[in-house]
Length: 82
Image (cartoon, rainbow, N blue to C red; front, side, top):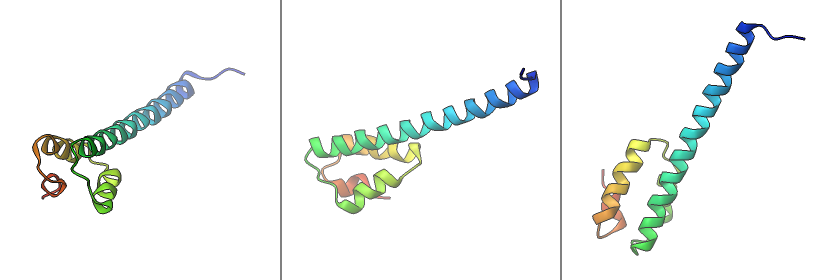
């Protein structure tokens, strides 16, 4: 059985879309882990609510903002001030 060019293109597009989504989700998880790790290493001890906020966030730009704040913050609360 042969696959038509249209079917190959469609299947490849679906695969590429799924692959891109997987990469994006992985980047978000890595950023969250890095942020929580930095907070722990710096002794800022985020609350359970703050940890859940980080792990539940799917906005990479928001996580990057928190990460930059975490570099200089004196408390975990300073990181998550909106």
